[in-house]
Picture (tube, rainbow, N blue to C red):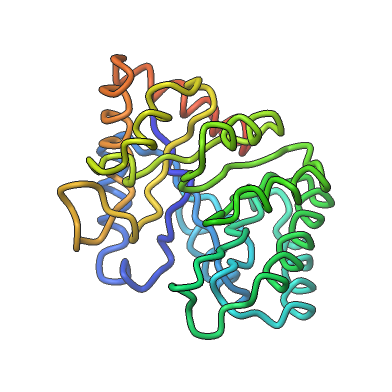
Length: 261
C-alpha cells in the first residue's frame, strides 16, 4: 500500500476523468490520497470530494502563493476545522514562498505570509492536527516559526528542497520530508543524495498532482498513480526493495496523519 501525501485532486485538471485517475492510483497500489486546500474558496470542494470516496482525506489551509483576506479567511478556517473535526487530517497546504521572480499576481508579501503561517500553526495546535508545509527559499524562517510554536503532531515538509542540515532540524521537531517527482530528475543531485542517505523513517511520498511531473513525463499532467514510480526510484537509489520503501513510508505517513493502516 502507498499513500500520496499531497495531491490536488479537486483541481479542474481532473474534472474530465477524476474517477478514472483515482482508480488508476488504486491499481498502482496508491490506496490513500491526501487532498489539501489552497484558499478559502476550495474548502468545501475539497471536503465534498473527499466525502465522496473513502480513499481520499482532506486537509484545509491557506497557501502562501495566493492572496487572502487574512482575518476573514483565518476565522473561516478555524470554523471549518471545527465543523469537520474527525474528518480533516491536517492543516495545509500552508507555508512560506519567497521566490521574488515567480510571485503570482496578488501573492502576499513576506510579512503577510509569516503572519498567515504563524496563525495557521496556532490553529493546527488548537485543533490537534499536523501541518502540510510549503517552504520555498524559506526553510530557515519556517524552522524559526516552528520552534516558536512547537506543534505536538508536527507534520510534513511538502516537496522538500532544503539542505541536509535543514532536514535534520525538521526531524528534531518531528517533521517528515515529502519526496516526489523532483527527485527523479538527473539535475537533482542533492535531492537524490538526501533521498538515498537520510533515514528512511524521515521520508514520505507525494505527487503534488497535477503539478511536479516525474522525469520522462514533463509537460504532462501528474497523477497520484505516479507515487509508485517515486517509491521505486527511491528504492533504487537506496539499493532496497520497492516493497520495503513502500511499507516504511506508508507506515510513517499513516502514523503521522492517523490514517487507517
